[in-house]
Length: 535
Image (cartoon, rainbow, N blue to C red; front, side):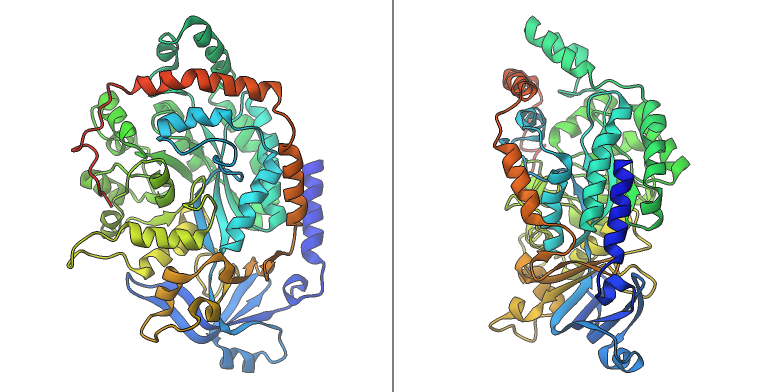
């Protein structure tokens, strides 16, 4: 009953208040430039001195301000000629609130980093979700693909954490596509667990084996004890388009073919999408070559896993044949530029993906280059990362980046028919940016508004964020939750000494670390396998 009480409490909060957006009365959002949607690789449809009529959480009209204000006199007007108005952005790949660095894990290659993260201390899932939610909203994000961590069995217990994470998003007013990452093999290295445990000193192998045993679960129980109950519990928010429940077998290496096939069946049965980490590192590329005698993409094609309901996260180590298969299958790809740089995974062949018209979304993953979740900064990272040398080299355009951050993200998270564009009928997920501050003291008129946004906009320039037609952030303040209270609680929680189980987990991580590293000694990363530039 506690979780449902919170949903009802949030509903009452949303209905209270005297402002137009809270009362359900129509209102107008105005901007000197209303950036509606990318219509080509070079063009974002824009309404100058534009306005949006918002009614019952939806966009009811888009036109010039003069036309809308004349047709609807007396309505409240938000924004003005100092603003850019754009669709809310979507972080298409996200995991945690407190960053790994904050919790003691420095950047390492993924294969080592995952075990190093055992040293991180426990964080309250509700408050942890709030931390990243604050950063995302403040940088113009209105929806997020949350890929949560699997807990020890039984599966029925996993709902407790999921409820708290979703409750945080509902309290923030942030739209979420929620998935729990599951795995059933190769939990430490890219080899069977039993095989790797035998290579460890006897006592360490026994201790680690007992820990791994807690993560084993009957695969079918994920449907009966997790998916079905949560679909029922979240039904109201799903109907109200505030959340989606998604699937996330963690990656090809740690999910068996049977688990992948079951996820495919569940996606079809319940109308859900799937997010799969895929070909993130060169070691994962080598794993598929050794295990299947072919690339990861070709193996996924062989087991009939690919399809338009699937988003492939990262996809760094894909070649032209792989990308042709992905394009033909209808899969989307989520590009995680900062994460790929931080963990030394490589640079994804983004331009080759775009040439094939593969749908692309954009994700910040654990954290961006500044160890935060600043989506506006991520736009620039993508822009500059894929600028290859040469006068005649094809460039990545601002319109393409705008599309990835808005339309692409909406489609990849299950909200494609609802958000991502400013057009009649869509939900009013809108971001107002102070164009004066972005362009001061001078911006040459030859620079387009979209270029200015991609090159210069920062979180400090975001003045207001509306989700479902309701203000969730305005003038650096969150309207629905008390940020100071959340941060004070976290500060108090994390000032306490580590608990016994946290110390034990940390001890095992330190003991395991050299064996994890040495497992890959015979997996050579040669220059021809790891070119300096793949993007």
